[in-house]
Amino acid sequence: MGVNMQDYIQTSHSGNTFEKVCGRGFWKRILKSYVPDETTDEALQLETSQAILLYGPFGAGKTTLLYAQAGEMISAGYQYLEVDLRDIPDGRMPELCEEILEYCAKGPCYLYLDHIEALSDCMPLWELSAQAAEDKNCLTMVATAEEARTLNPVIRKLFQTYYVGLPDASDRRSYLDEMLQSRFEHPSLQGMNLLVDGTEGFNYLEMDALINQIKLQIKYRIQNHEITVEQAVNIMDRDILEEVLAMKKPEERKNDGAGISDANIAALMQMVASAKAAPPVEEPEEKIERAPRDLLEDLDPEAVFDQGLYF
Image 1 (cartoon, helix red, strand yellow):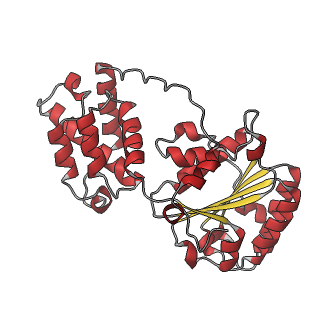
Image 2 (cartoon, one colour):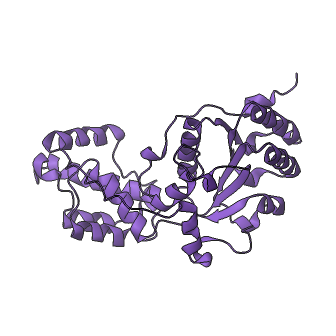
Image 3 (cartoon, one colour):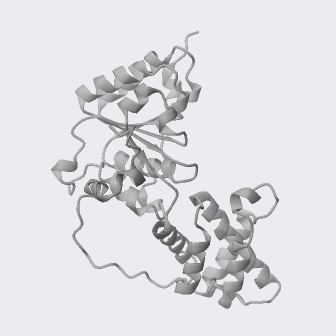
């Protein structure tokens, strides 16, 4: 019995968009600029098929960003196609590309290729890109934790390549503030500065684990009657933060048995929410911004792009 290549193409998506993504403001603006809608400048419309690769360290948010971008493209009328290239049988890549082109013939597609480093024969993908470019209706996105220079040269020629690094101080502040504000009072400046400085070199998964450790410390203090539920809404207690930051990085502690269950976190969040609701977030003043992709021109090329691989 032959292999049905459609079985290797995932077409379902949660529908989550950038609204569900905390932090990562710069890359959200860049990736959202590829989404066509009635307010998008004509210069930013997807007029030709494009292939874009995000690479960088594990936990930098690449897959999260692309998944949210896919939700935006689906809302704009694109079909969602996801392929894990590790699953494709040897020699069957040409057939898979033919299946993808059949989807593209029905309308514009958002194609997410997972684990591009697993692709040994890149020529079918090259031919797919050429045909999609002729049809002008496919946005192909890839994220990998591999060094771009180690990828197949065909991939490096085919994809426009961007480096997504670990969150800097500004993005860590934005992410932590957004994550904490959703459940607690607005953090104090002193406490937030301590958190931002103490999380240098953390990825987003490690910051999530850190926040869970803070919640764990608060839960213990409530249970031991050291603080009340009402006091727990102010989580920026310096002693708590210093105690948590003095631990090893959360990623290094993942097998130590430390942590708090989802059920316990949910119980704590319910207690805190019932004590005091978070204050409303003030809307920033409206200001005119440059086109998101134009912002790339202002950045230090060595800090954003791998000059040897950016085409």
